Length: 564
Image 1 (cartoon, one colour):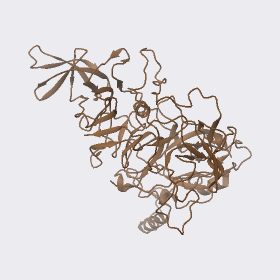
Image 2: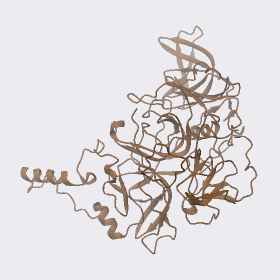
Image 3: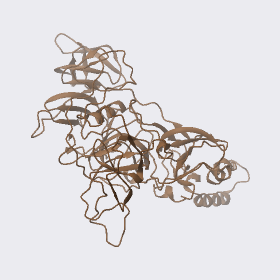
Image 4: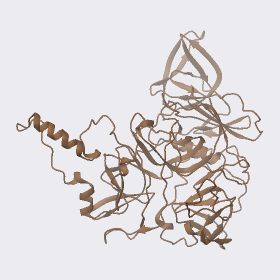
């Protein structure tokens, strides 16, 4: 599996809009934030997170069997299950004060000092390094989030003259990247992720090659300069009588000298461009360009300088006429075992899932030698199975607890592997069956949740093995070049609810496709957005209030993940 180099960024400065008609809100000048390119219905996972991979040291969290779900069939789909208890938090019923993150990522350290970097040459100085330090990274907050805090700095040192603040739930944040003033303009730059819906942010898809991502709102002159298609003359028609072979050759040569996004190319094939090349015309106002199919996490829409714009979560500005809101995500949700779901109660495995869009309920003859259709059944219907199966003319049928039979050619069923070794009686673990495209979450030997997934397709298969969740992020950007994706370079800002368990392979939400139950990804295990959110809050390590990401450690292990 190839790991891609990613460029993270933080914003310490802000710049005003280039127009008196623009909103008074300030936007951060982001320093080299990698953008998104992806074919609209796929995601590659041969990549690594923008934030690094360091261990954390935190106290153990209490075990819970899963989110609470209402027994009412009238529960709104926008109302999620309650977030599971992560143990008694010191911040419970906390009245304040809060520490607000002003840096795009405000790191949370185990000690009030930056970590040591033993591999750094002595000749190279780094701002956030403490020689001989034993401090390690526990997690981070993102700009716009707030966490309960002791308001008195516990220490000031040369690498953090603003002082280190101790969070009530543990860990220390340097005051250079945070504030106690929740009216601070940098804190208010970003709205925090939505804790109640299936996705943390709103998303948009770039519809054209070459769309610039600006650091600030451009003037009309700047926009005409960086978006030449706004004033580009019409192309000569192919059947023009004045056109000859020599003219065609000259036109082809001229075409090759144009920037990649202005060249004529096969519309059915992705452009031959790398993520690095997208940043080549980076200047004071253009951060980079995008390929058709890039996804952006959207903050808000506004009008300035005679045009309509989107601001992104990381503070960039994109023209709204070339970036459209993504389609609503799937409202599919898996099943919590033993809980009522839409009037249907499933209290044990196996669980069946309808995958085909043209599936039927089947009725078997008394001698079970023939099968006939007895009605249609919608895709992604979830049904309990009795465990009784039969084969008729080479087709397997599973008996449902509702009395009809599910043809496995039209669906799938849970089939977890053996219990893991040295399993604790209350230990959480996750089983992913690649053949069945199912996921089952357990507490000890008890199954508590079941759903369907989309793992890696041909040539991008998800590797089997036993792993543990190494790190979790409410969202992070994933991107890569065409050498890891046959359908071209890809990038998606703020992929939701990521749980890395094996290098660049992760469990995460996918809002850009709805093919759950079938292989689809470039290696990661895709979950429907609601499932990704619920599983994220259920698994360990837990995220305290206000945290955007966290790392596991030897004394606060991540949930075990078994892929087979």
